Image (tube, rainbow, N blue to C red):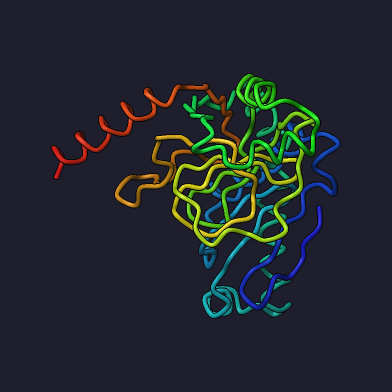
Length: 250
């Protein structure tokens, strides 16, 4: 386990060196460390952010100094507390966590050409037909490696290797919310209208980020995801129903 400074108010706890070699095992280990740090509730720690091989720990350096004196320096003092929280409980927690299985969320996706504007580009790069791309993408099970870029954006591991496609050379300035894309060896979903350079292959009518809910994100690190292909008509019906429900709530 490695502790790396991240500016003056954060550090990275690197749990593993590689992700691609054993993605599920690595993600499970990262999530175990994340949960142990949540349980430890170390004074001065503001936020924890799990990612592929690490957990970022954001902290208030002034609070650390006031609470602990930090004779060894803020970074070293916090690293000691993190190690103390993780190491003794790690083996016990690993045994309990192994019995748990992450929840599975089904994401309906319309792969119609209207939404899958980069399907031809992916097909050209991968030498896989558009129909096969849809079939492969919608029959796999993925896991959320981390949430980032914009609120609620899930980076999903598990994309079939033969669908991997480099990001676009020139990112788009405006991508609609719900757009599903492929970026390198990953797939993901744009929860909000934003710029982006991933190859768009479809769109979901689901809302992935809602600041009025707790938690505000539909998906969390470690969750399992399955895409279900839907027609353009089903997409419209789902969208109309969502708008009607929100109107009633308003």
